[in-house]
Length: 97
Image (cartoon, rainbow, N blue to C red; front, side):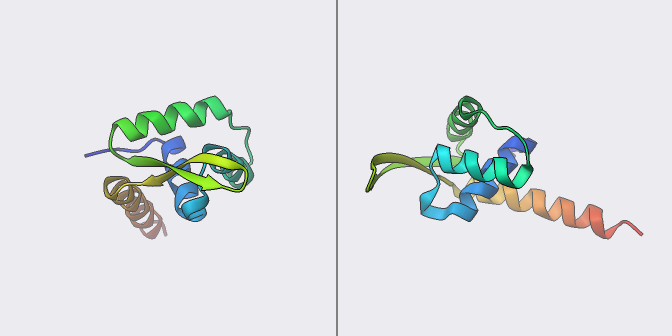
């Protein structure tokens, strides 16, 4: 079972929101905006590489008007891992009263 750290969660959520437009730069920009914190592009690349090695993310090259770009998307295992996180949060929040 793959457990996701906070930064990995943010990257997968950004990929899901960006869909086919998910490049490292666009993921970084969305996470910075949503989380309100500085995100280093090197940290994004390192984490994406690690997640790809774990089978949580896949990459492909896409032709764009600005040239060829590497895009990222969660694999079924990555989608399952983020769903598990969301379910855990929902259970924890519903238990508050």
